[in-house]
Length: 215
Image 1 (tube, one colour):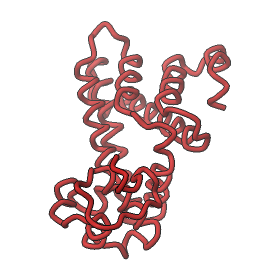
Image 2 (cartoon, one colour):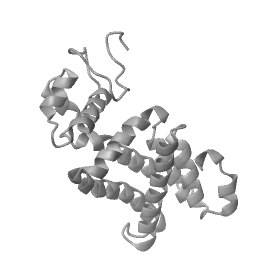
Image 3 (cartoon, rainbow, N blue to C red):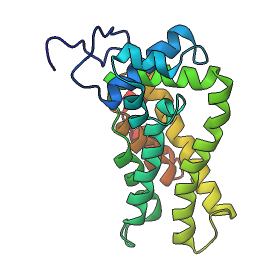
């Protein structure tokens, strides 16, 4: 990174002047900081672009609207999971394939936690974002349920595929909560442990053998 550019990974970084270029991540961090400071509804795309030193056209190159700043990565994650599940060999057990796909789609580390906390706080407190959260979580869940349905020869909306999709999402959200609270490593470690335990029916011996770092 150039010595003339502040570290955009720090949520409170202030950008002065027009940078040579602005990445999707840099623009997202600036937007999130402004949402947290001014309120989501009181922050305009024009203001975000001005703070980043770019044009509104550049903003729309990366994001379709303000809300997509919070959801674009999530939508990409869903597509990565879908693609990984579609490519999973038939001889890989269903739950192992789901675990591997979910882990492959997530790349967050301890340094990402401040950003993720801001995102989740906004989603929890801004009504328009809270309303859209259900739709996005449903899309994530459906990606898993459709795969389970294919493996089981049942519609995605039938009991077992639906239960598998929802249980997987619940386990992943629990993993995210512990990772966010502890801020001690890579999210994939928590996801892998939670989904391995789910696959084993949360057998006591499996849980006791897991790393105490997840406690």
